[in-house]
Image 1 (cartoon, rainbow, N blue to C red):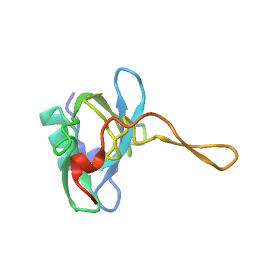
Image 2 (tube, helix red, strand yellow):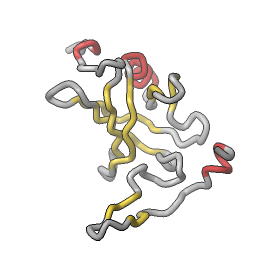
Image 3 (cartoon, rainbow, N blue to C red):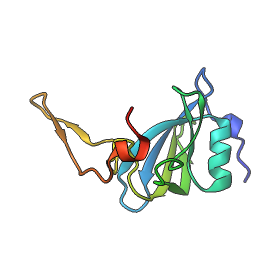
Length: 129
């Protein structure tokens, strides 16, 4: 059954949140935004594409770092306003060098614990920012 990408509920900027999950482990890797064209590119290439709100440009995950995400499945929620993209992650998903962007745990006492280990040095991959 063909799906009309325009039936998704994009926000006022034409974006829809895309939660990226490791298809094998179920770990949540990141959240980014897709517009219609980024979703089309993702479906056509089998790798994730997003819309960078800060750069106002398309972003092919892994283009700079080599840490690509091979898409296994794309689901949308019952409200049609959020995507779940299940991927096979190659390398780390986070630009800070961690496997998941969700590596800061808020403790009950208000402190923060970093969970996981860095898989690469961001300065070596992206240069100083």
